[in-house]
Length: 118
Image (cartoon, rainbow, N blue to C red; front, side, top):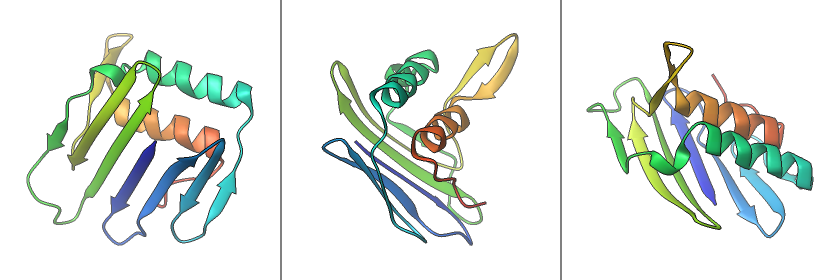
């Protein structure tokens, strides 16, 4: 599992899985070892937001003053390699269009305790 996020005028941040440890590199480095329950909640959220149906590429032109991201996960039957620039997957919840990418990063922040830099 490797997840990286970059926003203009903010540091690059990556989460990498090494065994049972989550290694976060960015403005501050962290090593986190989530509990089995925390991992279960994370994987359940990814299933709920439909990560397995994400496209390979979400790109809205240039990274002039926006953000980019990349997600690579191989876990059990899940095999995702998805990237984006200034765009990401969405889904409908309660009749409203929501950002599945934001939901993904919220779940990652919940798992690691490390927030994206705004």
